[in-house]
Length: 427
Ligand code: ACO
Image (cartoon, rainbow, N blue to C red; front, top):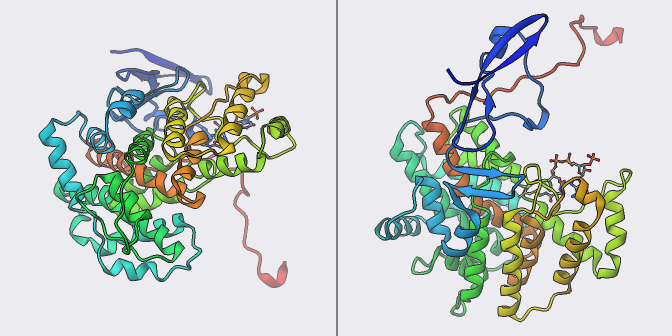
């Protein structure tokens, strides 16, 4: 018998098992809490609640550690590729050369979209946000790929997973093309996953598109950095949607909707807008004061994180990548200087030190994506593209988990107690 935790409630003693993972804090198993005590726990935002068991990603927020299947994110970002990291997330181990070649080929064979989906796009306004289009089109995939929506069939799950990872770049690139009024560019499977996405986004049928290898590498790295992040809001949304047995396309559409919010995936768009608004380094102190002012809703976007109370390890790689891209594209954007100075000033300010607020992955990603040529509205769509593999890996893990149940949180009810209906003419 392992360790246990004792609870005293309403004068009675209760004991609950304590579970240990392979690393990280122990957890108190309260599955029998309500049955035994008649009480629930109250944990808005789930800051103290493990909603599942998972073997995919590990984060130590205090130390600034992020591991995928045990491998540090810095090593993956430096030495791996998005395809290899995707294989790792899905399968648990790094692939052999043959396994990687087979996986890459399988993904590239699923990059095309059902032709009728092109007409679906035309139902949107041209100025629709790409995330609005992504929610709609990804949700609509279940109407086009019936042959892979039986979640009880492992082969269906595998094919739908591959389809989602493969089609997401095509869907995102088409959302962009639609907004700028250019023709959709079909995938070219001779290119890498990321090279193909760049061509579908920035290429035009009128001339050949040459993929810049520095940009390709930088974007591939950004995809790796966004591939998974354990039980964040959008991943938990995917799991919650999937817990009812909904098909994977519907679940990923739910994840995309959640990711859109400015406190989550929308933060890189908000961070870049903020850097532009600040404009020049001399205006930074004013914005830092605003961020510290309790009466001002303004926050430093790209700063702070629910889990990281240290430098986000992904932000370190991002900062380095900005330099590489700026050098390769000969970009001289003052916004990078503002970002560096803002980071330095905030990291030396007692407010940010005391609250352990550090730059997160979104602080620099917008600067890079903008230099590559993506409009700010596409940033979150790129995040969704990369996170799809994480969502899919987590969804698969959940479906295969024998302890899986429909997600159904409880509440602390503070509304009216039972009362009788009053007819309209008596009110
Ligand atoms: N600027 C100024 N103050 C901040 C910031 C910030 N960016 N972030 C947190 N704080 C302050 C809060 O005001 C709060 O102060 P208080 O304790 O005096 O009330 C304290 O720090 C704790 O903040 P919470 O919002 O309670 O922390 P939480 O863990 O709930 O929020 C979050 C994390 C949402 C990321 C928050 O830091 C934030 O809004 N950051 C800006 C948005 C952002 O960059 N989001 C990207 C997250 S990463 C991702 O999704 C990939």
